[in-house]
Length: 129
Image (cartoon, rainbow, N blue to C red; front, side, top):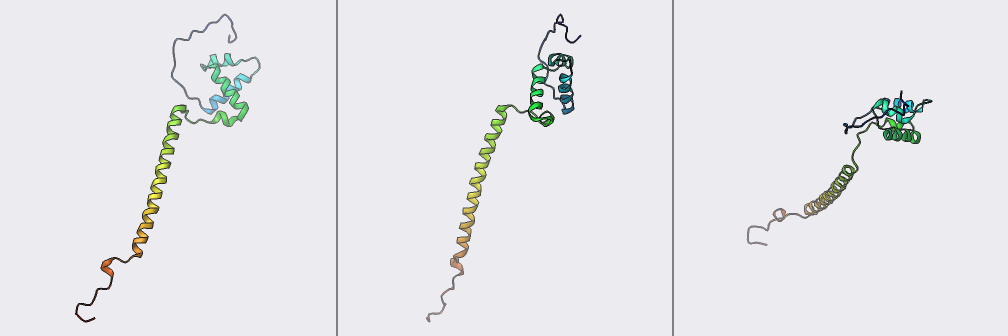
């Protein structure tokens, strides 16, 4: 009986994180919407934390099925910050290298405009001028 107040559940340890498909999320959220069913009962029956079901319900009410269907990998906020910092560093480096290339192109063009000494007409070899 899912709503039995005499039943006590003992949590013995941490379980590994599980990834749910969009269909599983939708089915669980739909089950919580059924008359007479509570979020806690659905969570216990399916081995899901109630807070996770509440979060999915909230996301679904705010963003519809798109929020629940986003099966992208969850990345820790610290990892995301590290990656964003790395992107900024690489963008800065790319900007510097782009500027270096432009400067070198301009220098090469200026050098090509000047004729090198070995291409200047040489003076006549005989003593007459």
